Length: 144
View 1 (tube, rainbow, N blue to C red):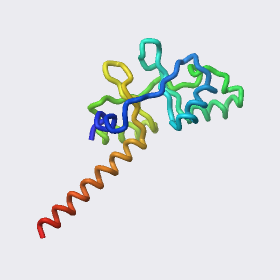
View 2: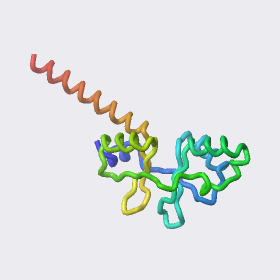
View 3: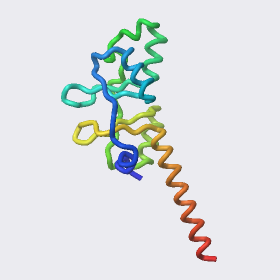
């Protein structure tokens, strides 16, 4: 199964923010939208960074409540790992595991077109395994 299949099923809507936004705003959006990360984009729509729940927690642990008034640029991860529509679920799992990340922005022609989380990958992997098991049961039942 590819990233394009997952995006077709879940949708490609992605929450973004600007590097000048405050961490407080990011934390509120993460909580309200019940998401784990927000992609930071510039005016042209190119990815500048990503802010995850972990980044917010590290910021508060380091700077206390005052950290919420920092700009996103001060706490975001700038070297963002991304994936493309043609990447497979196996490639996603390897990339997420190797880099200890849970969210991958999907890019096409250097533009953000969606977001894949580890939860999305697990969900679609489980569905594929269940389909295979049902197909195997049907085959065995028809052969007997």
